[in-house]
Length: 119
Picture 1 (cartoon, helix red, strand yellow):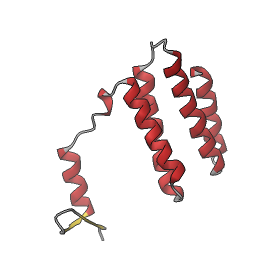
Picture 2: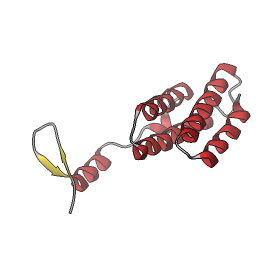
Picture 3: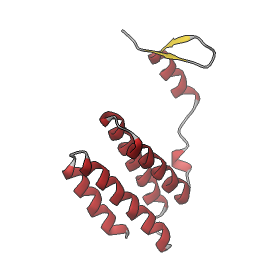
Picture 4: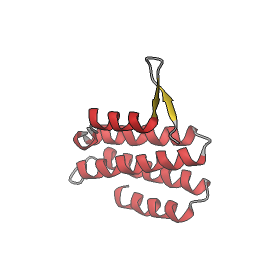
């Protein structure tokens, strides 16, 4: 049985139908983001993960943070701006701290090591 979502026209749609429509209408522009915007997006995901109390949502938002950081890394691979590099390192550290506080110590250590490359 499919779950349902409520759309803004006050009709009920099957979630699978809504997901297919959403996926085909709006493509992700994440690949075109500048370094600053990718870093801003990573911080947005991380902030929301820190505010959440649902362990599953926290992990999804941590994953989204990591994906945005990957985009930031690609955009900033040859950037010498120390503030931007420090920004990436800081998000990695905070992501590690959040994961560690939720019992994901191995993953946290991976992010701490990644932060060392940027900070």
